[in-house]
Image 1 (tube, helix red, strand yellow):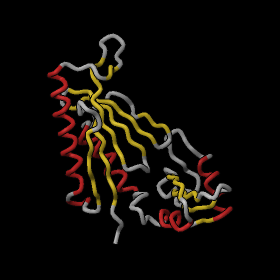
Image 2 (cartoon, one colour; image 1 turned 90 degrees about the vertical axis):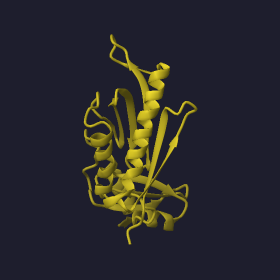
Image 3 (cartoon, rainbow, N blue to C red; image 1 turned 45 degrees about the horizontal axis):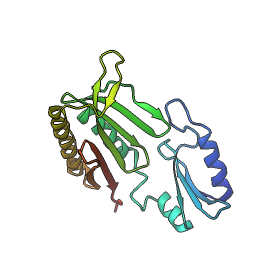
Image 4 (tube, helix red, strand yellow; image 1 turned 45 degrees about the vertical axis):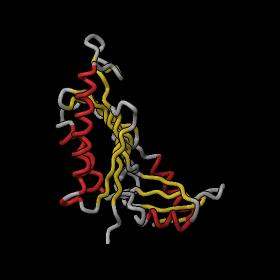
Length: 202
């Protein structure tokens, strides 16, 4: 674990190494923290090549985060649990668009039981959002948000409830160190937020 000026220099080199896959190949395996001129403590973790960064009020908080005492950053296997669930269980590899890769952000669109769903998530954050999109326009091939018949709206709600059940089932079996919960966002309940937290390893 690096601290001070060395850590500050290191994170600059890591962030400058961003490749077209959205990973940071420089100094993979390293982490550290340092204090900014404004007094804020910044910490980074590039142990998985994703270069997660967070700011903290105190040095101890930054150090604890690097040591995984907040349940994040997650080990690479934990991250894969979420991605595998999204691709293989929710979309069954049937997404319509190549995953959008903007640094640590991911976004895909696909049909789930006939309803068009968009998923958004960011590595290093404990949240995944699922939104029922509406229809694909038959000429432009672009999805139109919020265009539903009453029947489609009811079906979309069933699909999001199915996703909720699958997400809540993640904390069983081999994922017993995972805590999960969900919130339906909007008044029509067609926007689902899934939150998760990895409990500290004993």
